[in-house]
Length: 101
Image 1 (cartoon, rainbow, N blue to C red):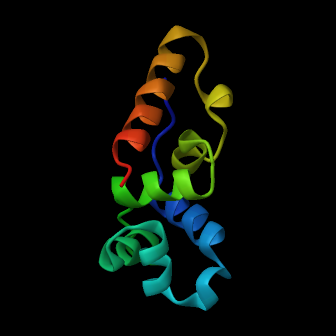
Image 2: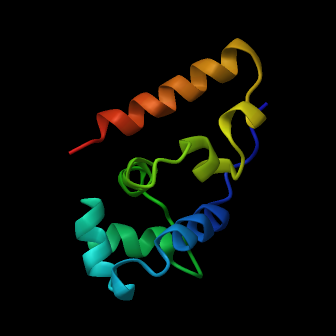
């Protein structure tokens, strides 16, 4: 069984990754990531975060991180054991790759 996705935790991980980048200019960060500024702002909102797939995919690509870490806070192999876990991990990586610019 997969852990519950915690949107606030995803937002914290995104904020931690982009902290100090682009001199704190979110518009510059959005341009660098190739995402809409409002999507980035919604993804890292302190009160009601709503991370978008496009932002998460761009973050995973730009920072070369495991997408499952971004979602769950642990590496894919620590979350998913067995054939189903590998299938889900592969699907998520395919989603990240398909969302490329």
